[in-house]
Image 1 (cartoon, helix red, strand yellow):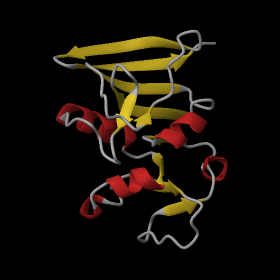
Image 2: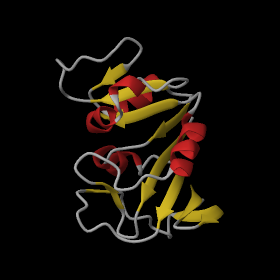
Image 3: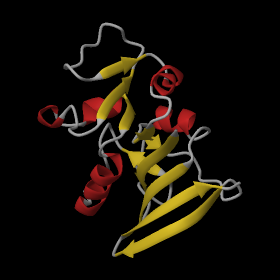
Length: 159
């Protein structure tokens, strides 16, 4: 089993403002689709709700939503769990990815094997959702692709 976190973050670790991404980077969305395709995708309920209704569930991946609200209804094919641990246990032996949100990232980073990060230039002042600090004593950069205004970076857990 492998667990990878996928996020776009600003220099101040911002990942969201009022339930939405603070930027629009088509290359990042394309990369996210490629990384998550054919995998188990774990997300929090707020992240689920941030996806336009006509685009969910996301195709070609197992959509797993974490919520403690048992009355929340999801379309057919979406798996609901009340905890990340339950979701991970249900998908042992599979490739698991997550793209948030903040609470999911904070809990899952301890179990993650890799981080697929889009580092976005600049800071977001009105930010209300953050990615955990990437501790370079724990993570090593193994790949980077620089673009104008952002960089794709893969980190792997150090041995």
